[in-house]
Image 1 (cartoon, one colour):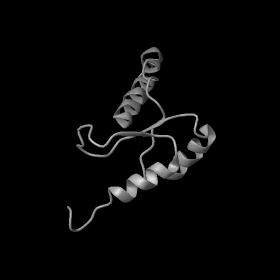
Image 2 (cartoon, rainbow, N blue to C red):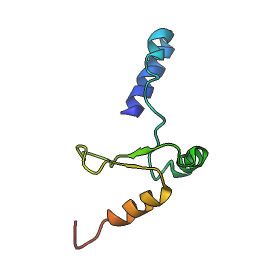
Image 3 (cartoon, one colour):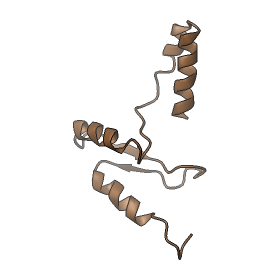
Length: 89
């Protein structure tokens, strides 16, 4: 969703509709893991546990599996708990 919002904002700016484009500054900083993991960790360390983050699973999860976290260990634990296992596809 964020990708589409950014694309629409850029299109509005290209058309010179800067006031309309400013209306698209409402979404929080977003990272796609694992690709943006190093950027995320850098930002995470800046906030040093003072901010809660939202982890959302990918693709058609329909809200299932969303959780809040404030420690990197919680991501590692989630990753280990939900890793694909041949006996449980």
